[in-house]
Amino acid sequence: MARSRIETMEENRAKLIAAARKAFAEKGFAGASMDELTAEAGLTRGALYHNFGDKKGLLAAVVKQIDDEMAGRARDIAAGSVDEWQALLAEGAAYIEMALDPEVQRIVLLDGPAVLGDPSQWPSQNSCLVLTQQAVERLLAQGVLKPLDAEAAARLVSGAALNAALWVAASDEPQTVLPKAIAAFQAMAEGLLAKS
Amino acid sequence: MARSRIETMEENRAKLIAAARKAFAEKGFAGASMDELTAEAGLTRGALYHNFGDKKGLLAAVVKQIDDEMAGRARDIAAGSVDEWQALLAEGAAYIEMALDPEVQRIVLLDGPAVLGDPSQWPSQNSCLVLTQQAVERLLAQGVLKPLDAEAAARLVSGAALNAALWVAASDEPQTVLPKAIAAFQAMAEGLLAKS
DNA sequence: ATAAGTCACATACGGTACGTATGTCAATAC
DNA sequence: GTATTGACATACGTACCGTATGTGACTTAT
Image (cartoon, rainbow over the protein chains, first blue to last red):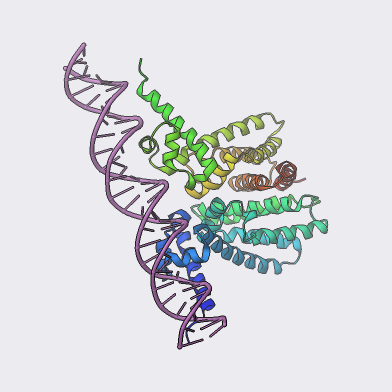
């Protein structure tokens, strides 16, 4: 029997997103050609504009996919920690390591904010940030942290982690720089603790 | 007497940078048209390519100008503080406030990294980062901070500050959010202190 | 002072890529 | 079985970047 319509559509969407992910990571958003993109997926620009509206829409879909994957990994890592505080630290370290992936770096950290605007207002909602904010709120309720604004603390923690990651990734020797970045990150995070 | 050649060239460069600054801030790097840019400056694209090589070169020049201005302001603010530590905190708070300027935000924080790559490797050298790193190194030498990598600490401090700034700027009520951001920033920064 | 030369900038051109408008054919609905 | 929907292909117009060439004003040398 011939493929159902919605079935092939899902497949085509997935193929386009996969091709876009590769092209955006390798050439950046501006440098990626929609014609090449779609050709590699065995389709044309027609499919792309029908499914995603425009080039930005495609980027948003790609960002959402990567962001969800990152949040999933972070959730797993946090689940393995003994307490909330250790979970938050581990989550931050995980973000730093994840940002070593050129795909994450280029698409989510560089082109994403530039093209789609501030991450906190993305349609994909920025799952990563939501996760850390929830963790911060729990810690605040437990009195583990100083009485700060939850969103502010979450933004700063993830911001510091991701910024450190950019630095590590751009470095000549990521493997030697990574532990320094994680150490500095954990030191700064301790500044949020209520008592010293 | 007719204008000397180098004199008019300097003027034209300045006019182009000024026009680019406005256009990049309003429409973003990708959305800014070189034709409109140069026309507003009373010139053509010929002048632009002769002076800056390409569109990225123009952005680099604009970024350098803004970055230098920011570093100058930060230097002034740091100079008014009683000790190095207070200076570092004040500097961070100053970065947060400066990033409320849409020009800074759009050009330096969003398009800059996306187009020119990691800020730490910009030709303009990122004066701001250099400044904070020097401050951190002095504090490390004085034993005020935990024994961390200077560059790592500096990157995290400025990263946290700038990320907080992006959040404040994107917020609906920047004036109410700003103090929360600064408070969280200073709390985190205290995590770098040797012993409390 | 005049003539040759330099160079900053203008003009003209080619190529590429995006977004839209229209066409088409298979899958669904009746 | 026919009609219709809609997912995707094709064709087109437009905008813009970067380059190659031209030109006129300022400089330099004789």
